[in-house]
Length: 329
Image (cartoon, helix red, strand yellow):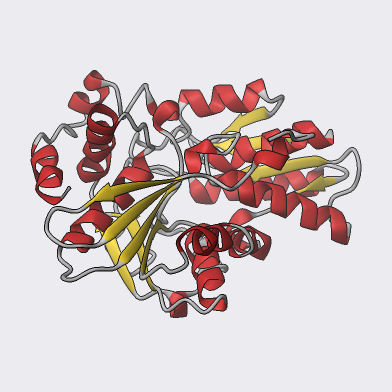
């Protein structure tokens, strides 16, 4: 395949099939790590910018400022580099060193907020307020505001959902992390729009408040909604059939298991989705087709999730997770 620019290779990511031991369900992992920025967020970064260009919110030579835990910022940095925009990412300590280094490598600038937050706390509100204020104070600046931007959601409706049905023809169960709701609800809407009778299942960290859970700190980044943070406007609760909560140790030890047993590096929120999805699929009888959306790769988490000392220091090592997974697949 010959392309003219890096954004031409966003999407059309591969599916990896895995086999269940206790039923005849076919399970496919949608590997979004194979997008150029290493995550599914490349899809919405491109769409948000292109739609803003079309309607005049973003003008030539402008500055893009966004609040992000890292993956959205990487996607925006790539698109900004190609389209010659200045890009500023407003992050907190949940953005891993690898993500920050990638943003800088693509020419992006970094503003860090939330210095007084604990390691497992997220400064979402402070990030968003800072990005909004900076965009208002700076001439020719655009704040995409991914949590409330419907161009985030439509990016998946028009691409990812189509890819799944083109490849599989039918999807009976779909599993995804939920944070802003862009990927989960966008893909769900796209599947339904194309006639699928799919069941939509979303996973958030224990401690996230999107479905009324008790708010408390968690380490999984780029997913869920911390206590006191507003609910993103683009979440469509009506289209969601079931929600699950993933513990940090379930998420991270699943990542480590799949790296060592399958040669597959995935990120923390992807690990949470994968564990809870396999748990649910294992409880089913008969047969069906399930897709598990794995949002990013583990290459950006080598200093925490895949670092033994960091895992031990945060009491996250749990060898029982390996045994549980091996009973399922």
